[in-house]
Image (tube, rainbow, N blue to C red; front, side):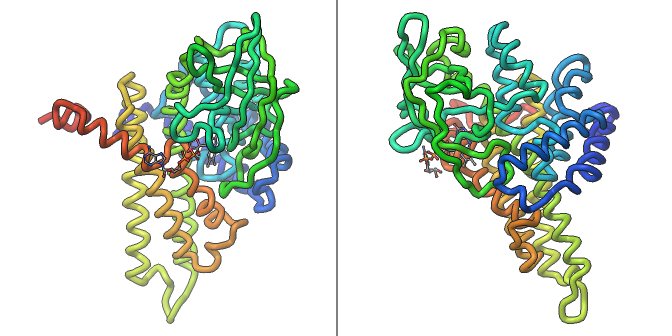
Length: 399
Ligand SMILES: Cc1cc2nc3c(=O)[nH]c(=O)nc-3n(C[C@H](O)[C@H](O)[C@H](O)COP(=O)(O)OP(=O)(O)OC[C@H]3O[C@@H](n4cnc5c(N)ncnc54)[C@H](O)[C@@H]3O)c2cc1C
Protein backbone atom coordinates (compact mmCIF):
# COMPACT_ATOMS: atom_id res chain seq x y z
CA UNK A 1 0.00 0.00 0.00
CA UNK A 2 1.38 3.45 -0.90
CA UNK A 3 1.02 6.85 0.73
CA UNK A 4 -1.93 7.41 -1.63
CA UNK A 5 -3.60 4.18 -0.56
CA UNK A 6 -3.15 2.40 -3.90
CA UNK A 7 -2.43 -1.32 -3.81
CA UNK A 8 1.04 -2.69 -4.71
CA UNK A 9 -0.53 -4.12 -7.85
CA UNK A 10 -1.05 -0.60 -9.18
CA UNK A 11 2.68 0.09 -8.92
CA UNK A 12 3.54 -3.25 -10.55
CA UNK A 13 1.39 -2.12 -13.46
CA UNK A 14 3.15 1.25 -13.51
CA UNK A 15 6.56 -0.49 -13.62
CA UNK A 16 5.43 -2.76 -16.47
CA UNK A 17 4.19 0.22 -18.50
CA UNK A 18 7.39 2.16 -17.79
CA UNK A 19 9.51 -0.81 -18.91
CA UNK A 20 7.51 -1.06 -22.14
CA UNK A 21 7.72 2.68 -22.84
CA UNK A 22 11.48 2.78 -22.12
CA UNK A 23 12.35 -0.48 -23.89
CA UNK A 24 10.03 -0.40 -26.90
CA UNK A 25 8.22 2.91 -27.40
CA UNK A 26 11.03 5.43 -26.89
CA UNK A 27 13.41 3.51 -29.22
CA UNK A 28 10.70 3.78 -31.93
CA UNK A 29 10.66 7.60 -31.71
CA UNK A 30 11.73 9.24 -34.94
CA UNK A 31 11.58 12.95 -35.72
CA UNK A 32 10.32 12.24 -39.24
CA UNK A 33 7.07 10.83 -37.79
CA UNK A 34 5.96 14.36 -36.88
CA UNK A 35 2.75 15.26 -38.75
CA UNK A 36 3.19 12.18 -40.95
CA UNK A 37 -0.29 10.74 -40.42
CA UNK A 38 0.22 7.53 -42.44
CA UNK A 39 3.57 6.59 -40.86
CA UNK A 40 2.31 7.43 -37.36
CA UNK A 41 -0.60 5.05 -37.87
CA UNK A 42 1.74 2.29 -39.09
CA UNK A 43 4.25 2.71 -36.25
CA UNK A 44 1.53 2.88 -33.56
CA UNK A 45 -0.25 -0.21 -34.98
CA UNK A 46 3.00 -2.16 -34.72
CA UNK A 47 3.61 -0.86 -31.19
CA UNK A 48 0.06 -1.88 -30.19
CA UNK A 49 0.77 -5.42 -31.32
CA UNK A 50 3.86 -5.42 -29.10
CA UNK A 51 1.91 -3.85 -26.20
CA UNK A 52 -0.62 -6.71 -26.34
CA UNK A 53 2.20 -9.26 -26.24
CA UNK A 54 3.81 -7.41 -23.31
CA UNK A 55 0.47 -7.37 -21.46
CA UNK A 56 0.24 -3.57 -21.26
CA UNK A 57 -2.35 -2.83 -23.97
CA UNK A 58 -4.70 -0.42 -22.18
CA UNK A 59 -8.10 -1.97 -22.90
CA UNK A 60 -6.83 -5.41 -21.85
CA UNK A 61 -5.64 -3.87 -18.59
CA UNK A 62 -9.01 -2.22 -18.02
CA UNK A 63 -10.73 -5.58 -18.32
CA UNK A 64 -8.27 -7.41 -16.08
CA UNK A 65 -8.64 -4.84 -13.34
CA UNK A 66 -11.47 -6.23 -11.18
CA UNK A 67 -13.38 -6.91 -14.39
CA UNK A 68 -13.92 -3.21 -15.06
CA UNK A 69 -12.19 -0.07 -16.30
CA UNK A 70 -9.17 1.19 -14.38
CA UNK A 71 -9.92 3.72 -11.65
CA UNK A 72 -8.63 7.25 -12.23
CA UNK A 73 -5.79 7.05 -9.71
CA UNK A 74 -4.45 3.92 -11.38
CA UNK A 75 -4.95 5.52 -14.80
CA UNK A 76 -2.85 8.39 -13.50
CA UNK A 77 0.08 6.03 -12.93
CA UNK A 78 -0.35 4.47 -16.37
CA UNK A 79 -0.99 7.68 -18.33
CA UNK A 80 1.95 9.52 -16.81
CA UNK A 81 4.27 6.71 -17.93
CA UNK A 82 2.62 6.54 -21.35
CA UNK A 83 2.94 10.31 -21.70
CA UNK A 84 6.73 10.16 -21.48
CA UNK A 85 6.83 9.51 -25.23
CA UNK A 86 4.79 11.27 -27.94
CA UNK A 87 4.09 7.75 -29.29
CA UNK A 88 3.09 6.29 -25.91
CA UNK A 89 -0.64 6.96 -25.84
CA UNK A 90 -1.09 5.76 -29.43
CA UNK A 91 0.99 2.65 -28.69
CA UNK A 92 -1.08 1.61 -25.68
CA UNK A 93 -4.39 2.77 -27.18
CA UNK A 94 -5.16 5.40 -24.56
CA UNK A 95 -4.85 8.48 -26.76
CA UNK A 96 -7.45 11.15 -27.41
CA UNK A 97 -9.93 11.37 -29.05
CA UNK A 98 -10.52 7.58 -28.90
CA UNK A 99 -10.08 7.25 -25.14
CA UNK A 100 -12.65 9.93 -24.19
CA UNK A 101 -14.92 8.73 -27.01
CA UNK A 102 -14.82 5.24 -25.46
CA UNK A 103 -15.83 6.77 -22.11
CA UNK A 104 -18.65 8.73 -23.79
CA UNK A 105 -19.98 5.77 -25.80
CA UNK A 106 -19.78 3.51 -22.74
CA UNK A 107 -22.02 5.99 -20.90
CA UNK A 108 -24.48 6.97 -23.63
CA UNK A 109 -24.54 4.50 -26.59
CA UNK A 110 -27.52 2.15 -27.03
CA UNK A 111 -26.92 -1.64 -27.35
CA UNK A 112 -26.67 -1.58 -31.18
CA UNK A 113 -24.27 1.38 -31.12
CA UNK A 114 -22.14 -0.42 -28.54
CA UNK A 115 -21.72 -3.39 -30.87
CA UNK A 116 -21.20 -1.34 -34.03
CA UNK A 117 -18.97 1.47 -32.68
CA UNK A 118 -17.85 1.01 -29.08
CA UNK A 119 -16.53 -2.55 -29.25
CA UNK A 120 -14.40 -2.07 -32.41
CA UNK A 121 -13.07 1.15 -30.87
CA UNK A 122 -12.09 -0.60 -27.62
CA UNK A 123 -10.40 -3.33 -29.66
CA UNK A 124 -8.46 -0.66 -31.62
CA UNK A 125 -9.88 -2.07 -34.87
CA UNK A 126 -11.01 1.45 -35.83
CA UNK A 127 -10.31 5.06 -34.90
CA UNK A 128 -12.80 7.84 -34.21
CA UNK A 129 -13.02 11.63 -33.83
CA UNK A 130 -15.13 14.20 -32.03
CA UNK A 131 -16.46 17.13 -34.05
CA UNK A 132 -17.65 20.13 -32.09
CA UNK A 133 -15.49 23.18 -32.92
CA UNK A 134 -16.36 25.38 -35.90
CA UNK A 135 -14.47 28.23 -37.58
CA UNK A 136 -15.79 31.81 -37.17
CA UNK A 137 -18.72 32.54 -36.81
CA UNK A 138 -19.38 29.10 -35.29
CA UNK A 139 -18.78 27.48 -31.92
CA UNK A 140 -15.36 27.63 -30.22
CA UNK A 141 -15.07 28.52 -26.55
CA UNK A 142 -18.77 29.40 -26.64
CA UNK A 143 -20.80 26.30 -27.60
CA UNK A 144 -24.01 28.35 -27.88
CA UNK A 145 -22.59 29.70 -31.19
CA UNK A 146 -23.06 26.27 -32.79
CA UNK A 147 -23.95 26.69 -36.48
CA UNK A 148 -24.04 23.06 -37.66
CA UNK A 149 -27.67 22.00 -38.03
CA UNK A 150 -29.51 18.67 -38.11
CA UNK A 151 -33.01 18.70 -39.62
CA UNK A 152 -35.38 15.78 -39.21
CA UNK A 153 -36.80 14.45 -42.50
CA UNK A 154 -39.03 11.46 -41.70
CA UNK A 155 -36.85 8.97 -39.69
CA UNK A 156 -33.64 10.50 -41.00
CA UNK A 157 -31.58 13.54 -40.14
CA UNK A 158 -29.93 15.88 -42.65
CA UNK A 159 -26.80 17.48 -41.19
CA UNK A 160 -25.06 20.55 -42.62
CA UNK A 161 -22.11 22.41 -41.16
CA UNK A 162 -18.44 23.28 -41.07
CA UNK A 163 -16.03 21.92 -38.44
CA UNK A 164 -12.32 22.36 -37.89
CA UNK A 165 -9.47 21.22 -35.65
CA UNK A 166 -11.08 17.79 -35.56
CA UNK A 167 -8.31 15.62 -34.12
CA UNK A 168 -7.96 12.11 -35.45
CA UNK A 169 -10.35 12.74 -38.38
CA UNK A 170 -8.01 11.45 -41.10
CA UNK A 171 -8.52 7.69 -41.23
CA UNK A 172 -11.25 7.68 -38.54
CA UNK A 173 -14.09 5.18 -39.15
CA UNK A 174 -16.66 7.45 -37.54
CA UNK A 175 -17.16 10.89 -35.98
CA UNK A 176 -19.27 11.98 -33.05
CA UNK A 177 -20.76 15.22 -34.41
CA UNK A 178 -22.56 17.93 -32.47
CA UNK A 179 -25.33 19.67 -34.41
CA UNK A 180 -28.23 21.82 -33.32
CA UNK A 181 -31.80 20.54 -33.74
CA UNK A 182 -35.24 21.99 -32.88
CA UNK A 183 -34.72 20.47 -29.39
CA UNK A 184 -31.20 21.91 -28.99
CA UNK A 185 -27.66 20.58 -29.54
CA UNK A 186 -27.63 16.85 -30.24
CA UNK A 187 -24.91 14.25 -30.89
CA UNK A 188 -24.84 12.05 -34.00
CA UNK A 189 -22.54 9.26 -35.08
CA UNK A 190 -21.48 9.89 -38.69
CA UNK A 191 -19.51 7.23 -40.55
CA UNK A 192 -16.62 8.60 -42.58
CA UNK A 193 -17.88 6.74 -45.68
CA UNK A 194 -21.00 8.93 -45.65
CA UNK A 195 -20.78 11.05 -48.85
CA UNK A 196 -21.88 14.10 -46.82
CA UNK A 197 -18.77 13.88 -44.58
CA UNK A 198 -15.98 15.64 -46.48
CA UNK A 199 -12.45 16.18 -45.23
CA UNK A 200 -11.47 19.50 -46.74
CA UNK A 201 -7.86 19.74 -45.56
CA UNK A 202 -5.36 18.54 -42.99
CA UNK A 203 -4.31 21.31 -40.54
CA UNK A 204 -0.68 21.60 -39.46
CA UNK A 205 -0.87 22.51 -35.78
CA UNK A 206 2.04 23.04 -33.37
CA UNK A 207 1.50 19.55 -31.91
CA UNK A 208 2.92 16.94 -34.23
CA UNK A 209 2.04 13.40 -33.06
CA UNK A 210 -1.75 13.29 -33.22
CA UNK A 211 -2.95 10.00 -34.72
CA UNK A 212 -5.19 11.00 -37.64
CA UNK A 213 -3.93 14.61 -37.52
CA UNK A 214 -6.33 17.55 -37.27
CA UNK A 215 -8.79 18.26 -40.06
CA UNK A 216 -11.19 20.81 -41.42
CA UNK A 217 -14.47 19.16 -42.41
CA UNK A 218 -17.45 20.18 -44.52
CA UNK A 219 -20.68 18.39 -43.67
CA UNK A 220 -22.92 18.70 -46.72
CA UNK A 221 -26.49 17.30 -46.81
CA UNK A 222 -25.19 14.43 -44.71
CA UNK A 223 -28.06 11.95 -44.20
CA UNK A 224 -28.04 9.68 -41.15
CA UNK A 225 -30.73 7.39 -39.71
CA UNK A 226 -32.28 8.24 -36.36
CA UNK A 227 -30.41 5.15 -35.03
CA UNK A 228 -27.23 7.25 -35.41
CA UNK A 229 -28.42 9.77 -32.86
CA UNK A 230 -26.27 9.39 -29.75
CA UNK A 231 -28.35 9.74 -26.59
CA UNK A 232 -31.29 12.09 -26.28
CA UNK A 233 -31.95 15.13 -28.47
CA UNK A 234 -30.98 18.42 -26.84
CA UNK A 235 -28.48 16.78 -24.46
CA UNK A 236 -25.25 17.15 -26.47
CA UNK A 237 -23.69 19.81 -24.26
CA UNK A 238 -24.37 17.76 -21.12
CA UNK A 239 -22.72 14.72 -22.76
CA UNK A 240 -19.84 16.90 -24.06
CA UNK A 241 -19.19 18.09 -20.51
CA UNK A 242 -19.26 14.47 -19.26
CA UNK A 243 -16.65 13.62 -21.92
CA UNK A 244 -14.52 16.70 -21.40
CA UNK A 245 -13.89 16.47 -17.67
CA UNK A 246 -12.11 13.09 -17.78
CA UNK A 247 -10.53 13.97 -21.15
CA UNK A 248 -8.79 17.04 -19.77
CA UNK A 249 -7.66 15.14 -16.68
CA UNK A 250 -6.15 12.41 -18.88
CA UNK A 251 -4.36 15.13 -20.88
CA UNK A 252 -2.91 16.53 -17.65
CA UNK A 253 -1.61 13.05 -16.74
CA UNK A 254 0.09 12.47 -20.09
CA UNK A 255 1.54 16.01 -20.13
CA UNK A 256 3.06 15.59 -16.66
CA UNK A 257 4.80 12.47 -17.98
CA UNK A 258 6.25 14.35 -20.95
CA UNK A 259 7.31 17.26 -18.76
CA UNK A 260 9.11 14.83 -16.44
CA UNK A 261 10.95 13.29 -19.40
CA UNK A 262 12.12 16.57 -20.94
CA UNK A 263 13.30 17.73 -17.52
CA UNK A 264 15.34 14.51 -17.18
CA UNK A 265 16.79 15.03 -20.67
CA UNK A 266 17.77 18.62 -19.81
CA UNK A 267 19.39 17.40 -16.58
CA UNK A 268 21.42 14.82 -18.51
CA UNK A 269 22.67 17.61 -20.77
CA UNK A 270 23.62 19.75 -17.75
CA UNK A 271 25.69 16.93 -16.26
CA UNK A 272 27.69 16.21 -19.40
CA UNK A 273 28.09 19.73 -20.82
CA UNK A 274 31.07 21.78 -19.57
CA UNK A 275 31.19 25.57 -19.48
CA UNK A 276 33.98 27.74 -18.10
CA UNK A 277 35.70 24.72 -16.56
CA UNK A 278 32.83 22.97 -14.79
CA UNK A 279 29.73 21.00 -15.68
CA UNK A 280 26.69 23.24 -16.21
CA UNK A 281 24.97 21.26 -13.44
CA UNK A 282 27.25 22.95 -10.89
CA UNK A 283 26.12 26.49 -11.73
CA UNK A 284 23.68 27.92 -9.22
CA UNK A 285 21.49 29.77 -11.74
CA UNK A 286 21.07 26.52 -13.63
CA UNK A 287 20.18 24.66 -10.42
CA UNK A 288 17.47 27.26 -9.74
CA UNK A 289 15.85 26.61 -13.13
CA UNK A 290 15.93 22.85 -12.48
CA UNK A 291 14.41 23.38 -9.01
CA UNK A 292 11.60 25.54 -10.44
CA UNK A 293 10.72 22.79 -12.91
CA UNK A 294 10.58 20.20 -10.12
CA UNK A 295 8.36 22.50 -8.02
CA UNK A 296 6.00 22.85 -11.00
CA UNK A 297 6.09 19.10 -11.63
CA UNK A 298 5.33 18.26 -8.02
CA UNK A 299 2.37 20.64 -7.85
CA UNK A 300 1.03 19.57 -11.28
CA UNK A 301 1.24 15.88 -10.35
CA UNK A 302 -0.44 16.37 -6.97
CA UNK A 303 -3.31 18.45 -8.38
CA UNK A 304 -3.93 15.88 -11.07
CA UNK A 305 -3.83 13.04 -8.56
CA UNK A 306 -6.24 14.87 -6.23
CA UNK A 307 -8.82 15.34 -8.99
CA UNK A 308 -8.39 11.64 -9.91
CA UNK A 309 -8.97 10.62 -6.28
CA UNK A 310 -12.16 12.70 -6.14
CA UNK A 311 -13.40 11.16 -9.39
CA UNK A 312 -12.77 7.69 -7.99
CA UNK A 313 -14.76 8.71 -4.91
CA UNK A 314 -17.65 9.80 -7.16
CA UNK A 315 -17.36 13.45 -6.06
CA UNK A 316 -17.94 16.50 -8.27
CA UNK A 317 -14.71 17.80 -9.79
CA UNK A 318 -16.09 20.72 -11.78
CA UNK A 319 -14.08 23.36 -9.91
CA UNK A 320 -11.02 21.19 -9.13
CA UNK A 321 -10.59 19.89 -12.67
CA UNK A 322 -10.76 23.45 -14.06
CA UNK A 323 -8.14 24.62 -11.54
CA UNK A 324 -5.91 21.61 -12.31
CA UNK A 325 -6.26 22.08 -16.08
CA UNK A 326 -5.22 25.75 -15.92
CA UNK A 327 -2.31 25.06 -13.58
CA UNK A 328 -0.99 21.95 -15.34
CA UNK A 329 -1.25 23.39 -18.87
CA UNK A 330 0.65 26.51 -17.80
CA UNK A 331 3.16 24.64 -15.60
CA UNK A 332 4.12 22.25 -18.40
CA UNK A 333 4.65 25.23 -20.73
CA UNK A 334 7.03 26.74 -18.15
CA UNK A 335 8.81 23.40 -17.76
CA UNK A 336 9.17 22.98 -21.54
CA UNK A 337 10.52 26.52 -21.87
CA UNK A 338 13.11 25.92 -19.10
CA UNK A 339 14.15 22.61 -20.67
CA UNK A 340 14.83 24.39 -23.98
CA UNK A 341 16.85 27.05 -22.17
CA UNK A 342 18.89 24.51 -20.19
CA UNK A 343 19.66 22.36 -23.22
CA UNK A 344 20.91 25.35 -25.26
CA UNK A 345 20.75 25.08 -29.04
CA UNK A 346 20.14 21.32 -28.83
CA UNK A 347 16.86 22.09 -27.03
CA UNK A 348 15.55 23.94 -30.08
CA UNK A 349 15.74 20.95 -32.46
CA UNK A 350 12.13 20.26 -33.42
CA UNK A 351 12.86 16.62 -34.30
CA UNK A 352 14.15 15.93 -30.77
CA UNK A 353 11.98 15.37 -27.67
CA UNK A 354 12.63 18.72 -25.92
CA UNK A 355 11.94 20.91 -28.97
CA UNK A 356 8.99 18.73 -29.95
CA UNK A 357 7.43 19.00 -26.49
CA UNK A 358 7.97 22.77 -26.43
CA UNK A 359 5.80 23.00 -29.56
CA UNK A 360 3.29 20.36 -28.54
CA UNK A 361 2.51 21.74 -25.12
CA UNK A 362 1.44 25.20 -26.26
CA UNK A 363 -2.00 24.32 -27.69
CA UNK A 364 -2.90 22.63 -24.37
CA UNK A 365 -3.59 26.10 -22.94
CA UNK A 366 -6.32 26.45 -25.62
CA UNK A 367 -8.01 23.06 -26.14
CA UNK A 368 -10.13 21.44 -23.42
CA UNK A 369 -11.06 24.99 -22.45
CA UNK A 370 -8.75 27.99 -22.80
CA UNK A 371 -7.08 29.17 -19.55
CA UNK A 372 -9.01 32.46 -19.66
CA UNK A 373 -12.37 30.70 -20.01
CA UNK A 374 -11.56 28.40 -17.08
CA UNK A 375 -10.34 31.32 -14.95
CA UNK A 376 -13.59 33.19 -15.60
CA UNK A 377 -15.63 30.11 -14.57
CA UNK A 378 -13.47 29.41 -11.49
CA UNK A 379 -13.77 33.00 -10.26
CA UNK A 380 -17.51 33.14 -11.02
CA UNK A 381 -18.18 29.93 -9.08
CA UNK A 382 -16.19 31.13 -6.08
CA UNK A 383 -17.86 34.56 -5.99
CA UNK A 384 -21.38 33.19 -6.49
CA UNK A 385 -20.94 30.73 -3.65
CA UNK A 386 -22.83 31.80 -0.50
CA UNK A 387 -20.03 30.57 1.78
CA UNK A 388 -16.44 31.75 1.30
CA UNK A 389 -15.11 28.21 1.75
CA UNK A 390 -17.93 26.40 -0.02
CA UNK A 391 -15.77 25.33 -2.95
CA UNK A 392 -12.88 24.09 -0.86
CA UNK A 393 -12.34 20.41 -0.51
CA UNK A 394 -13.60 19.04 2.85
CA UNK A 395 -10.12 17.56 3.39
CA UNK A 396 -8.72 21.10 3.63
CA UNK A 397 -11.36 22.14 6.14
CA UNK A 398 -10.70 19.40 8.70
CA UNK A 399 -8.96 20.21 11.98
C1 LIG B 1 -4.46 20.89 -31.04
C2 LIG B 1 -5.93 21.10 -30.97
C3 LIG B 1 -6.79 20.01 -31.05
C4 LIG B 1 -8.18 20.18 -31.03
N1 LIG B 1 -9.01 19.10 -31.17
C5 LIG B 1 -10.36 19.27 -31.25
C6 LIG B 1 -11.24 18.18 -31.53
O1 LIG B 1 -10.80 17.02 -31.67
N2 LIG B 1 -12.57 18.42 -31.65
C7 LIG B 1 -13.09 19.67 -31.50
O2 LIG B 1 -14.30 19.82 -31.59
N3 LIG B 1 -12.28 20.75 -31.24
C8 LIG B 1 -10.93 20.57 -31.13
N4 LIG B 1 -10.10 21.65 -30.91
C9 LIG B 1 -10.66 22.99 -30.81
C10 LIG B 1 -10.69 23.52 -29.39
O3 LIG B 1 -11.67 22.86 -28.65
C11 LIG B 1 -10.94 25.03 -29.51
O4 LIG B 1 -9.76 25.60 -30.05
C12 LIG B 1 -11.30 25.70 -28.19
O5 LIG B 1 -12.57 25.31 -27.77
C13 LIG B 1 -11.26 27.23 -28.30
O6 LIG B 1 -12.07 27.66 -29.34
P1 LIG B 1 -11.48 28.65 -30.47
O7 LIG B 1 -10.21 28.08 -31.00
O8 LIG B 1 -12.56 28.92 -31.44
O9 LIG B 1 -11.09 29.96 -29.67
P2 LIG B 1 -12.02 31.25 -29.43
O10 LIG B 1 -13.31 30.83 -28.84
O11 LIG B 1 -12.04 32.05 -30.67
O12 LIG B 1 -11.18 31.98 -28.30
C14 LIG B 1 -9.92 32.59 -28.58
C15 LIG B 1 -9.31 33.09 -27.27
O13 LIG B 1 -10.16 34.10 -26.72
C16 LIG B 1 -10.17 34.02 -25.29
N5 LIG B 1 -11.55 33.77 -24.81
C17 LIG B 1 -12.56 33.16 -25.47
N6 LIG B 1 -13.67 33.12 -24.71
C18 LIG B 1 -13.37 33.72 -23.54
C19 LIG B 1 -14.09 33.98 -22.34
N7 LIG B 1 -15.37 33.62 -22.18
N8 LIG B 1 -13.44 34.60 -21.32
C20 LIG B 1 -12.13 34.98 -21.44
N9 LIG B 1 -11.41 34.74 -22.58
C21 LIG B 1 -12.01 34.14 -23.60
C22 LIG B 1 -9.21 32.87 -24.93
O14 LIG B 1 -7.92 33.42 -24.70
C23 LIG B 1 -9.18 32.03 -26.19
O15 LIG B 1 -7.99 31.26 -26.30
C24 LIG B 1 -8.70 21.49 -30.90
C25 LIG B 1 -7.84 22.59 -30.79
C26 LIG B 1 -6.47 22.41 -30.84
C27 LIG B 1 -5.57 23.60 -30.75
